[in-house]
Image (cartoon, rainbow, N blue to C red):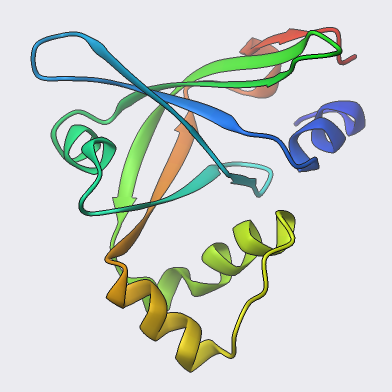
Length: 139
């Protein structure tokens, strides 16, 4: 279980760097918004993005969350599950937007917008508990 300080850090508005492996072995890294529910990290993307194709082929991932001015960081490895059922994942899409202060329409409109954007959710299960992550200057 994550400590209260780690939970607070993960609950703040910051980017998560999501790193996957391209077919040729080179890394692919992108900054994203995320939501942590206490057991998984959730990242919204679209079917048009490279990371969608990467994680459909190879679910291995490395995540990095940092705080540039404070040099606080969390780094971990995990496995991605690509979740494509927008209706089932609507509350998680909502949680990401709420965290970053984005307006959210009513459910039917929100669902239609996500479907039109070809949104999917990357659900990342860490390879181990928070005690096994590389956590710096947070505790």
